[in-house]
Length: 139
Image (cartoon, rainbow, N blue to C red):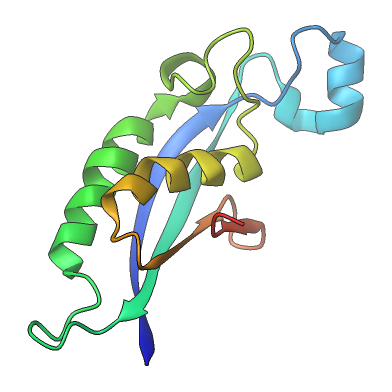
């Protein structure tokens, strides 16, 4: 039997969705107000889910304190109160990723995956707003 444990977290961050090689008009037509050159922000909510067999010795799939500390170090400290385009390496260079919710959730998953038991499945859900959210599980 497998069980999924979940940990919620949050961070606040600003970003701008745009492609530097495009005109302001084209960026606005594709990304709308999210392409504002002065940036805009979100109060992101995050759920990290780890699925695996329960360890018969500890009774844990994963120690939740370990998961909490991992999220704090690799997600909250990296993203919280940051301008993603300027302060997060994956997004801040000319060839960097556009900080869409889809790309942010993949970056977060990639930061966490090396620290999770390889026999366990990792899934990350990122809420950009209460109604707009994305999930990634490595597939």
